[in-house]
Image 1: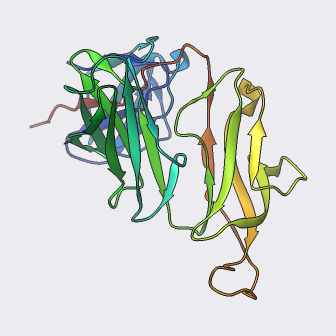
Image 2 (image 1 turned 180 degrees about the vertical axis):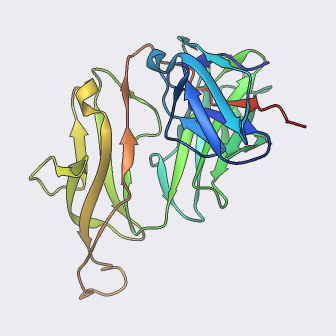
Image 3 (image 1 turned 180 degrees about the horizontal axis):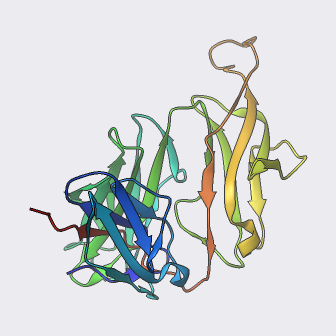
Length: 271
């Protein structure tokens, strides 16, 4: 009924039914989350467990989440940029396959709604899709061909002029991770980076590189930048601003095909 779930996936659990309040349980333990959907980002085996929800006193059937390991059959990645883009923006995602790009189809999940996207095939091993968030705060894109799947790319929207742009792919243990502090329509003159609201460097470049990622690097990152729109005026006033915080999770190297899974939990209706 549900697709397999692999390490590195984003998993959305949706509590279908009527009534308030909404309650969630993991392994029988009540959770503080109360929304109609629960988003689990970059899952690992630590997310394994039995998930249930309750609406208006009616409880869903339990769903057992087991996170497995699987290498991706194809690579999906932004042609340029990372995981964050400005409201109303879009970017090309490029699909690289080992055999034949014909026959692949792609998907997008925005909130609780999913759509099919037909990729434009550039050559035998390469295709491209145009990724848009529309009005969604985040959206996840992936491609399939039969039982073969690509990794997933999750893009997030910001309405701020300053944005922290982490990689679109999960951060892997032992590898380098580059965080960029970008300015909409311009370039940062100086930038300071923060992890969990604490400054992490006294350097002022617009990129911060984690050279050997460990679990200790998992956290919420943001940046503060000063900038001027010199392309508008040579003596433009200096401005400054903060980015939204972005989550960075470091997981093991044998992580995934990165598929995004939407799992529905239905509550029974009390008559």
